[in-house]
Image (tube, rainbow, N blue to C red):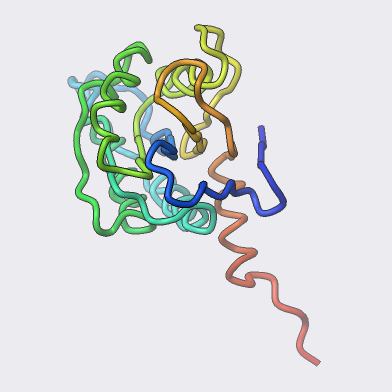
Length: 199
């Protein structure tokens, strides 16, 4: 699914606004399959080698769509932290990676709203890295106000929300929603990956 607001896929912030918060939600990249023998603790399951490459490319595309993040929060799971590190290099070099229990696998979206409200008092742009279904449910609840899942964030994909007034269910606005391949493609177009043929 692709959703872009405006011709460039971005939504400008009102000048001098202290209420407007932008939240970029990133699902961890492709990880190794569950295997209790290799990873008895599933939280230690890592990204695949290919998944790391694709997630790095997606993070580079993310930099074409969003400004520098003030805060970067992640699940403590290995696959999420690895994704957050790639995102950090692309759009959050000045922000340390914070680990939020609210972003752990299997958490309902309600606690994410509560944590985000507390954490966003000194930030204009926050990046959240975690898992599904929590993240897709969080985005859906942000724009619809109820528990109906209206969007799905694919692995390594991302969504951007804006909360113009306050962070609560139904108060968000979906700015864009892209898969990791769509994000990577934006980076390639920006870098001129398809040069014209030489004479």
